[in-house]
Image: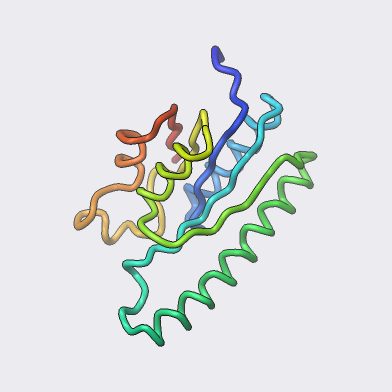
Length: 143
């Protein structure tokens, strides 16, 4: 490898491909002695439009996502990797991933080839394709 990565981002959504992306990102971060940012985006377009329902569903979803991210931190520590920081955000996953990478000087992004939102792929486009085309750094897409 020519690059020495210092700030890696991996996006997870609970899909099989994102699990593989997480595992690979941990190994690369260990090899490069890099910081690993783990991000999970709650897709606001999939939540209810009612203000009451939105806040209730969002709170439940955020709690679940935070638990999953804590599990990822624990999994990484079992692999003797501690330099990991979890993030949860609300919005368009593809836009938030690129925004986070730009705002935090990320030099490598890992993400799954397909995620949980495969059904909406034809309607809104692929998150992976968007990130590859708009990211400020290298992107590795994992199957």
